[in-house]
Each structure stands twice: as structure tokens, then as C-alpha cells.
Image (cartoon, rainbow, N blue to C red; front, side, top):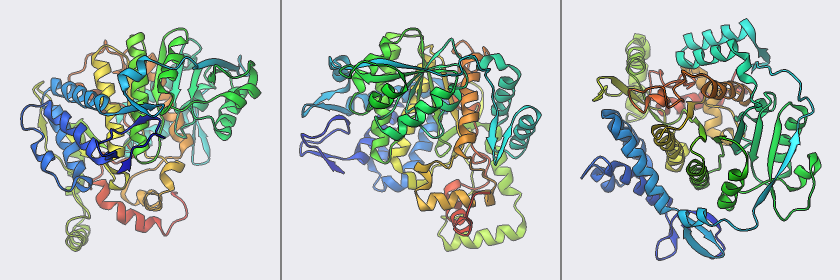
Length: 509
């Protein structure tokens, strides 16, 4: 709960008449609207829920199951959730609240212009390798590692095959014909380092912080790409690295309308990746900001494509075989292990070693699907809402005929995650349960190549011309979940045990 004041600016949670803001109530209202898309009474249980912060995963799973029952349900739920969010959030400027629609339609006159920085190695070839545990994997070594990850159920077969296709088609990596927008360009797990090696034109949006832009400028200067940076229109003229370092940067939360206007001014079609992350309730607000920019760009340019990196710690619809594989692994536990786990489950009142099972949903399209719940309660309902908004936008935009790349990225040891002592320890002990945690350099190499696949491969599900039996199949494909989907246990029910192991280890490997 926070209070509203005249000093607020930018995108904010809605305020009540007494000037208070409740992030929990806003999240509940958005999910209630999504349930209500299913018809009268669908949100009744949620409205009566008194333990929202503990029980929100239950409602997310219900929502995904409802989405699976009929393909049209998934789109109706997504639209309702997005519309409720758009109505609820406010944009404050000059001490006054505005609706998001009003704010986005009236950017300030003093906006941004473009500063361009060319890489020094413009003629250098485009190459791809994957940094992994002190090695740099390419060629046969990379293919063997993809095979190993697939056999270990760390990645889905569709993820491995997409990356094999990229390796067999190196010409795909030349992105000189595309303008890619990174909202949150400095994201640790984001693709910026690779785009600067693949001749891409990259419009980079991130905060005006010296260390952020020093990294971006260094990567751009030494690469073969082109960096397009937002610079205040009132800044002194100039170009080059020093000018970008001195003036580049923008705030997604407070300069949302101006950023949308700047991006609309760039020539050609845009491929927009929403990557920004902030702690706590700010993560929801920055997700709302990115969605407002994406919506404005798509309305102005229908050929705009979208990209998202879905978190593995969420609730997902999955193919039936994934659900059955997790259940089978639970049933195949050794007798001694079963007895020990049963004792620990009893002592913990059912909190530990919960089976990773779900009901099989018979969809009206004749297919059968399951769900997986990989939510970690420590991340909280704000995190769940922020990532759900991105899934909803991906579904709605793909259904409207736009190219959308959305793939599950693995749990990654980024600073924003490992600064939480419990999660850091859980990551170090995750291998005890067959879950692999990735280093940022590995994740950004894999996910950057996967984005290229989704942009270049005419058979990719990202292409709206490729038929889907169900909208949620868009997110089922290409997943690198680190092993969570096929884990025999509900991930959060073994996180405390993984953390106990992790507290005795200095590293993940």
C-alpha cells in the first residue's frame, strides 16, 4: 500500500478517494476482470479470497485452465485483462492524473531526437557461439550440448530444433535489414551484445545512467551494428560515443508518451522487445509502460513485431506429454525416497514435495493439454501480474495478425535475482533436483538466436500465417525452462530444500 501525492509522476497504480494505492487490490481487480470474461460468477471465488498473497497461484492456474478449454477463451481472457489494466492505471504529470489513453495521445513538445553510433567493425562477419561454463560452444560442440540439454529435459525439443536451424542458416544472423527496439536494452539476459555482432540497427531504451550507457556504447563501438539512442531534443547537438554517453537515456515510467513518439519517428518497420525489469510494484508499472508503447506503435504501424522473454517461474499451458512426464517421474521415485518425502511432507503440513501434477484439459479443438505451476511465492503477485500482461499482449497481438516472438527463458543468475539470499541459495542447490540455472551470458546467447529464428523462419509459430490449434501453443513452443516443467515436484515445494543445499555451496556448479 502506498500513498498518492502531487510529487508523483508517470505511470502509477490507481489511487482511491482517500489517496491510497493498493497494488494487491489492483492485481486482484485485473484478474477478476479476466475471470469475468468467462461469464457470470466466474470470479466469485477470487472475490471472496482472504489469502490472496498466498493463494494467487491457484487462481492463475484456474485462469490458464479456463483459457485452454476453448481457443476463443484465451483471447477473451487476455483482452479483458489488458483492458482492465489500461483503464485502471494512471499517468501523472504536473501533479494531475490522466488516463493512459489521454497521456499517450498527448506527448510533450520537448521529446527525443536520435543519436547514432556506428560500430567500428561494420564489415566483420556475423558469428554465433554460446558461452557455457568457461567454454565457447559452436559447431558440433554446440549441437552436442543442445542434445544433452534436451535429453536431460532442461529444454524442450522445439527449443533445441529452433537453435539447430539458426546454426544451419548463418545468413539469418545478418540483421542489417531490421530495426530492433529494446525496451530495457541493458537487461543482463537481453540480446543487445549479440545484436551488436549481427549488424542490427538497435534503438536502445534505458535509463540515463553512466554505467548503463558505458556498457551499451562499448558494445556498440566494438561491434558491427548501429546504435540508435534517444537524446533529449533540448540537448546540445553532436554525435559519436561521447555525445551518446553524455545525453542518451530515457525513463520508461515517466516519459512513456515521448518514447512512443520517438520510436514512431524511426524509419521502417520495427521489431520491439519488452525486456525491462524493476523490483516490486515498479515491475508492474514498467510492464504497463512497455505495453502502452507497444500498443501505440502497433496502432501506427501494423507491421510492428513484438518479442518477449517469458519467465519460467509462472503458470503455463503445456502439451499433454509434459504433464504426463512430470507425473511419471513422480511415480518412479525410489521406495526409500518416497518414505522420506512422505515424512517431510507430513512435518511441513504438505508444503514440501508436492507432486507436480495437473488435470488434463480436453479443449474444444480436440486436443488435450496440461498446465505447470512454477511460481515462486517470494517473487509475489506483482511479478505474476507483470509477466501475465506480457503473455496476454502476445496472444492478442498474434491473433490480430502480428508477428510475435515469446519464448520461455531459463532461470538466470542475474543480479536482480541473486540479491535475494533465499533465491540465490535455491539457485545454487537447484541441480539437486535436476534444474539447471543459467549464467546471463549463456541465456542472452540462446535467447538472441531464438529471436532471430522467430524473425527469419517462415515456419515459426511467431508468424501469424502459421496456423495454431490453440493460441496458447505460441508459448508452449521453444521453451527453455531449465527442467522446471518436467520436475516431479511443484518447484516451490522443493525450493526450501534446494536452498538448504545451496547455503553449503559457493557456486552453482
